[in-house]
Amino acid sequence: MDPLAQELNDIIQEQNLPVYFMLSDLGKSLFFPKGILAQAAEAKQKAKKYNATIGIAKEGSGPMYLPCIQQYLAEIDPKDSYPYAPAAGKPELRAKWREKLLEDNPLLRGKRFGLPIVTSGLTHGLSLAGDLFVESGDVVIVPDKFWENYSLTYGTRRGAEFRTFPLFTFRNTFNVEGFKAIISEVASEKDKVTVILNFPNNPTGYTITPGEAEQIAAVIESTADQGVHVVAIIDDAYFGLFYDDEIMHESIFGLLANIHPRVLAVKLDGPTKEQFVWGFRVGFITYGLGGKDDGEVYAALEKKTMGAIRSGISTCSHLAQSIILKGISSPNYKREKSEKVATLQRRAQKVREVLKNEKYNDLWDAYPFNSGYFMCLKLKTVKGEDLRVHLLDKYGIGTISMDTWDVRITFSSIEEETIEDFFETVACAVKELEK
Ligand SMILES: Cc1ncc(COP(=O)(O)O)c(C=O)c1O
Image 1 (tube, protein in one colour):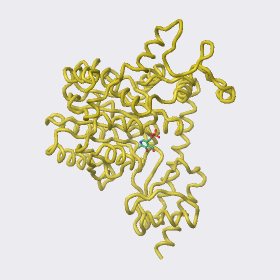
Image 2 (tube, protein in one colour):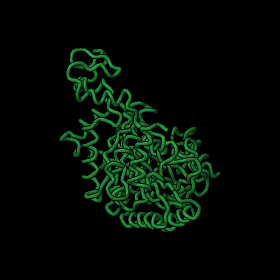
Image 3 (cartoon, helix red, strand yellow):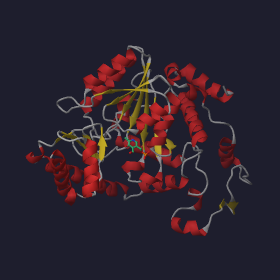
Image 4 (cartoon, helix red, strand yellow):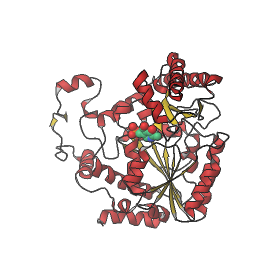
């Protein structure tokens, strides 16, 4: 074990034993080396005369660059695009995202939580959480409708075992009892459990109500009370795309941060879906610990996370971070964002309206949806994969088949005026397959 990792482990072990327990073997051995990046960060502050630390080229006081590239980045100062960003991300962006979290999540006000650390998109953040806290033999709980990539991230890469529960009750509400049953089952076998909470949910587009959120938090708290360590991974990829008034308009992170010393809340979010910058590859990982004064523990976890970033991808795109910082700081941001959310909301409403037509009743049921990019149909007469292939081959319509009877439809990609025709064609394809 590297002495620097040992130092971080000592801090975590002394000040927050449950978090130390929750670290994977890899998490325990991670540290941020006092190597090139750390020395370069120090030099950035102090080397006022010559800075010959980091592997970039300079001209005058700024980075060297090619005009054929710079012409496309006219409004971005070269210093905000070409040099490496710090391992934990651009400090101004981290501070701005924290501010945004507090603004968007009233439950977080007055709570202790870490400074968001920049990741290369949410997938990277989810993977970092896996590196630090998920171990071979650990159990990860997800509802039966979940984003398939979790299996690769936590199952294939980290060796965790997945256990699922039905996401919905027969009343089409979140299945709190099912969640409670599966977590108690795992708690009777293990002293650590990882749960993934993803609302708006991919694939169904479901977001819980505030009441359901309270119930989920209570189940997690009581599990921790029984001596079990709970790593709550909160995937807020589609945060803010809420289309109903009665659903929870903030992250469950606000309820789980500081809830219990044995609960570690790890929030993954970012502009990918929220600000429609899918290819930029920027996200954030933010920790919310239990326990008392966690200042040093947050710092130690940040160092470990930086070590995981450094060893995997070194640093995230500086250019993308700078553009996002400018975008979300712009006076136009809120207006432009709410216009786009309203467009998606209208599409969701149109889908609901179209699906009310009784002629579809024999073909499918729609799972409840109230947020995000997607909705799912549960087919009654044909299999999802058969329908997907038929729609693609005969009509040039792309959908995603999931499980045996489900198809996922990304309504966020279909213009409102064409939604009726879309479902009419899907219905026609189902009937053709029934023959
Ligand atoms: C639930 C969920 N989480 C995370 C991601 C990944 O986000 P990113 O593109 O930022 O890695 C997706 C993308 O489809 C998603 O649906």
